[in-house]
Length: 63
Image (tube, rainbow, N blue to C red; front, side):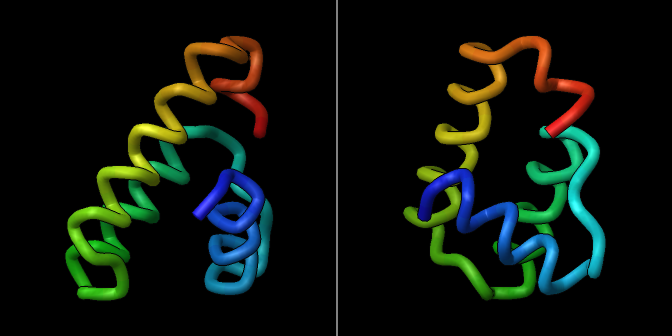
């Protein structure tokens, strides 16, 4: 799972683009709770989003 696939799944589910990394983090947390992601997939996705957020701080408010 990469950043683009997370954004794509988010868009398919919500019918709009995410406005922040926090929104994407909440979305993948919900997917994990519902059982749509395994624990390893969830951990990888969180690490990917957190890494993306720290490497692109201007994107924390706009994705």
